[in-house]
Image (cartoon, rainbow, N blue to C red; front, top):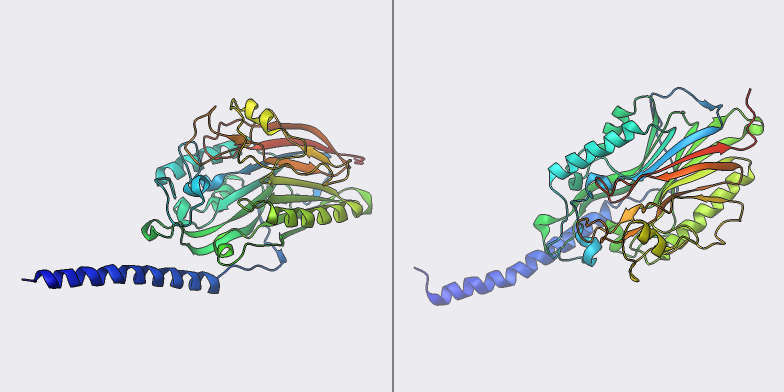
Length: 379
């Protein structure tokens, strides 16, 4: 039988070993993340797959759908601890990931919506291929299976072997993530390219954050002088206090202006993590039945960001994003408008419609757009 002295010594040793073991875990995790860090080049050519065979756009009237699907893990019954406290260490009782049944339910709802809204172009963000948070379901493959007559490209923007947060709950770590932007079209692009946005967080934060990018598909049209349709799927930075977004937006602006100056039609859609110029946060909140709050609402893109003849396309009557600090309480949960389009001056916006799904299967609502390519000669 152990003496009281020996028991005290064992307890003391364990008390000393636990912090040491935790330190070893953190150091080993950071070392592994640093060695295996996903660091893509500025430009990467993407694979074009799918079954669309229509290579040339001959119809000036086109339809679009943009939707951040929230990796099928941020539906109405979900919250996310990092949105609540931005803590590296604890969850404070909030969710790191939802039950698998929630993911399956959300995924089915997303697939049904896409099946019922087969626009010419579909731009999706936060599409998981192999992630612990969505129970390793390959959303990208499932959508491509549903959209059999579409072309498709996938652009990776989040690849981490093990996201270790919350650090003091290693048994509940966020884990492996492989996710990105999925772009679909009834037309087959001539090229599909990933462009890495400039800027990143300091070490070690950047090891566990997204590598923000835009996915660009270039489509041939029947127009003279080689005029192309350039479609861009974007997902800009969050949690950055604007430091990274400013670099991303400068890069995007330069790209857009060059493409337009070459005579092309240019369209950008996605989750910008900021609001269009002059869109009132208070107005968007009221549209969602929410009393506006003064804290933590998105910034606006400046009115002089693009030349005046460029056009922003959004539906200010339908909020596109909700806070996931808590599960949804519609009419109380803060909402915003950060999902929209930007089109070049040679494009006419016919209609824009935000689909108010009340965030049932994602923390974002989809946005549909119909447009017409101007000065388009048809045979």
